[in-house]
Picture 1 (cartoon, one colour):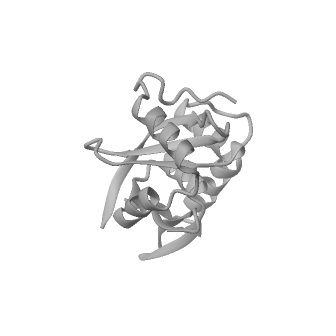
Picture 2 (cartoon, one colour):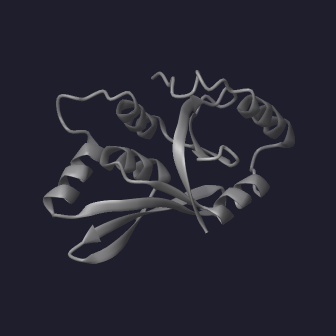
Length: 160
């Protein structure tokens, strides 16, 4: 089953200094942190903060191409987790058909923000993310405490 989620924050992991996109369902019951690369985090942060660039960035270009082909992004789905790597699909409506395109979650999220498409996560991904944490138990405990102590006012304050 797919669960609709929204971005509740873009933070930096205090342990690894890697950016994390934090997705949360509407009820706030389920949270999914996804570690992303610096460039992808920057693309997401630019859109969250409504910062426009003088020239199209990669995700802006992708949105423009999709629109110029008379297609639209229906939704993105974080659909799988294998060996600690998340997978996503971008669903496009094109010529009356739906096309699913493989993508990294960070790229799919950056595109979803630009096209105002909904973000979904398969419930099995959330369940598997909880049970397949690759980090040692100490880091897991520290990270869990940190995630639980996040102040909603701090979410979205990602700085490059």
